[in-house]
Image 1 (tube, rainbow, N blue to C red):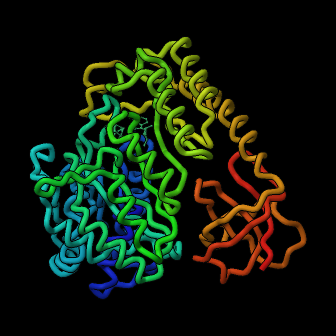
Image 2: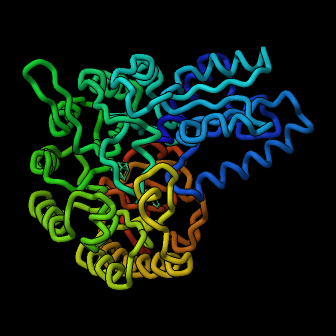
Image 3: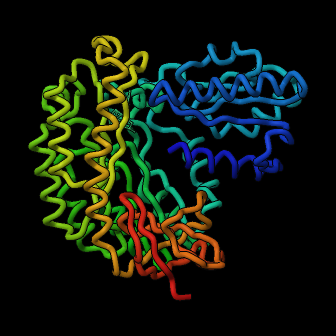
Length: 447
Ligand code: 5AD
Ligand code: SF4
């Protein structure tokens, strides 16, 4: 979501005449798009602010803006920081170009966030227009784009800040989504990722007709130039599940990849988290997915050290991870978020050391599984959409090549590193896998 918002704001600023820069030393304006999901993410922003405060001492004209979830959560508290000029919530981002111009002229600080975000009207025409006009996502990854299908969340998992900073769940009109996809296709986009906090709850009522995610996937599949369609993130409930899996099975363009966070394997903890399923029900969903969509890759999220998580609860999570056989999973240490039910009612009583130990242990369990799954690709040829140059040099890649290391992803979201011409960025390539590690496949390409 944040990557998309950053792309939208960047496009809007460029249209308004600003140039983007990677060099803070040469900038007149610095905007930080922020995340509130864990305390650590917020700490990083404060550390950036410390740096920018210092910069402002030598360049008092530097404009600093905080946008996104932290802006919505902290509002005025952020504006009180001497170095901060603009605080703008995620629902106000269409105003950014105007705000920046205004502050550059007047030098006055500006705050714009949603007052009572949970009471907010689901209609937000300004955001809807903004979305449609500046829909081209991260241009640094050619041929790919994110498209928002839904905003906000109504699930209220007890640990999570999202419903309080992104507001109520709203599904965008199917016509708008499809129009946007067609426009992107016309601009050379080959892969789209539909976004929603709980994308499987997508629901749009137009007269008699109720649209669900499977309907969007089917219509999107009819757009010639779009070759791969991905969607994240799914909430593990039965609602619409069968229809969505059937769409994945029937529609070749829909990638066989599902991000389905379980968060815990202990039913006691799942209940305390306000997740509406048991570990057994979750495993049944996985079984159904694998039966309906052969070869589907599944990724998960887990939180360790949730209040009152005992060794037994953690062992239940380990056991779930072993049974689930994820392609990969993301593991987070519980971080109390002010204002959430978890923070108000539960005590953060698992020591930091224990959280850390469980985090490392769970990742080690997953690493073994990822290694087993990735090694099955040895000797096989996979189709990847090439993203561009690999950011870090990989030792396991092809030796002695004078071509740069490129990175791409398969339809099932496996990361593939290989040497090849940079002209492949944004193109599909067939890569023969010659080496594997738990999270990355390495290979060679013919052309
Ligand atoms: N502490 C730790 N992890 C969290 N997540 C969400 N809220 C918290 C929190 N308070 C994790 C969940 C979610 C992912 C995006 O972040 O696992 O799926
Ligand atoms: Fe947060 Fe739960 Fe909504 Fe996901 S489903 S965004 S974890 S409240």
